[in-house]
Image (tube, rainbow, N blue to C red; front, side):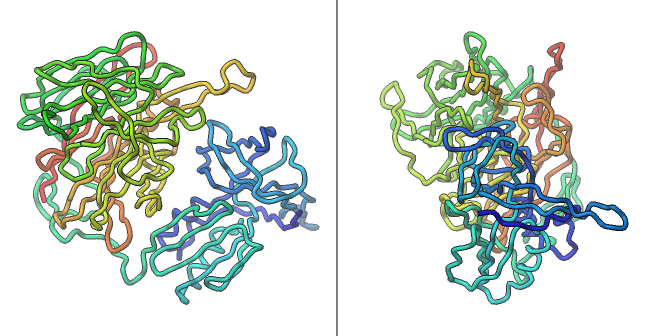
Amino acid sequence: MLTRFLSVLTVFLACTLPTQAAWLEPVIEDFAPHDGVVIMPADGDYLIDLDASKGVQVGDLVSVIALGEKIVHPVSGEILGSLDQTGAILEITQLKTGYAHARPATSGPEIARGDTVRRFGNIPTVFRDETGKGHEVFTELQHALPNLEWSAGDAGSAQTESVLSFTLTDDSLTVLGPSGLLHTYPRARADKQPAPVIFPKAQTSPEGGAPARFDISYPGYDIDLNLPGTITSADFLRNGSQFLLASANSHDVAVYDLTSDGRQLARYAIEGTPQILSVAWWTPQGPGQKSPFLAVTIWTGQRLTSALLHLQAGHLTEVQTFMPYALGSFDLDGDRLPELLLGQGFSEQSFFARRVVALHLEGDSLEAGDPPIELPGKFTVTGSTLADVTGDGAPETLLSRYGFLYVFSGEKEIYKSRKQVGGSLSVATWETLPGSEYSQAEHAMIEVAPTAYDLDGDGVREIVVVASDRSSISAPGISPASDAYWLSAVKYRKESFVAGTIGDRINVPIQGLGIHDDRLLFVATKPNSLLKEDGGSTLLSYPLAR
């Protein structure tokens, strides 16, 4: 079916509306229009030239647009718009670098190579208000997202002609698409929104003085240790009386005791020419398990593999190698000792395969089983943390991916940040369809996992995550993804999340994050230049005196 509509040439100023509620900003970002073209059909799907760099996500809808006659002002000659037609609607199913896979969600005329597509362009959309007081929200959405064809529907009513459904409740705005849930946005209601947020307990700056407000940045980092080489991954662990730092550059792993002036305890070199993507401490529970293990994820160009090392008597010894997983460790009980080890295989489409396994020691080898906790579809074993940050007694999934911080309760997305999270130096690059004329290089950033800590002493942990200016992205893995990095703190307060910052911005990537004795620790890395190895790394800290 073709739908004719008037396309007016206006500047999209949705995000600057003066009356726009702050909690609606991620909604508007997620449904902003972007134009592209159909590249080619592919096994019942279509390849289109939109990707994550345009903010596109799996589940997004794109309309196939037939560009129509231009509307020209008879006096000034100004082009006011065009009479375009909407054909079929496609749903994004896979994201690649430079393009995406999309499958038909509705019927329409035949789709041809070179056809124009528009993300969320003229999609029939119904707004259902279950509060009886959502007129202002509906009006803001209509003004901010004129690319959607809005209609009002009764709460609970069926609206078969709509493709998207926005449902407003007292607590959230939920969006459904053809395949089910697209997004859930926690709603900051006027009677609950703390703006600006001030912590119940005073948080004192390092220099002393007045309590610091949560939404204001403040400087003051201490240099604790200069580290050799370009560290691309680091992890911290309290091990009895020791506090350990594990670090990795492209080809070897080192362990330092930070309670003994940063003395190096052990080193392990990976044979050949691999690339170490990440390191993670693991402390399995069981009889006789007193010394920690180190999970190392390795990339060889087209193959994902990993090694499990055991730290004993100042040496790192191999337990198992050449496992077909990326590895990540998780602390489920909140004692800051990661007792759960998860593995995730390789996918040519998105690097991380959908299936996740729990790994446990049986004698001297690892056995795989089902994870003991429900995980969301976007989950990755690197860049993720499991921690209770809402105070409900159950761990949420905290995920740094695609430039966003996501928070999931089970499989339900309850928070998504602005696109200013992550920006790691650790990047895997691989080739899709090697040997084919359609082969293309793909990249996946292996992000630093968020951490969770009770910053203000109210009994509920806040999220601390690496953030960066994503406006100018450089070559992945060759140079920093940004020239500005900082630490973002995200707090759950009265059914909404509020973001703040800790300390000043720095101009080199942050490759590891941890907390010890009320100090926030992180590894800042200056990468090597293209022509010589002139990089270096520094362990920095920030006091979290409350």
